[in-house]
Length: 63
Ligand SMILES: [Zn+2]
Image (cartoon, rainbow, N blue to C red; front, side, top):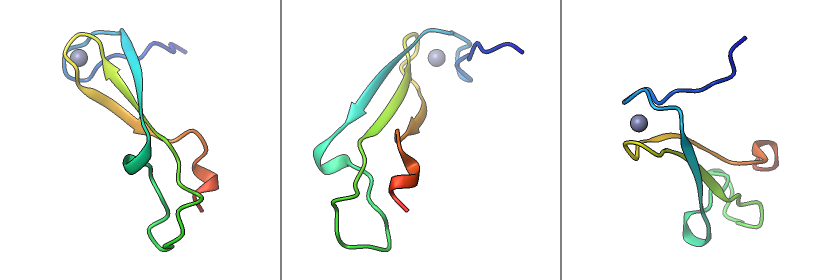
């Protein structure tokens, strides 16, 4: 199995990861408390700058 990911837009296979903190954290929609909020990470194509994937490190903590 090939583990190499490619950008769906330009086909490049080099990425950089960025993260959003503070106001951009992801919190449970159904709750008003924000202590469970997660940093949002972005996987960004180094070639064209497309955000290929946005994710949190511990999705189960949001639930
Ligand atoms: Zn790209």
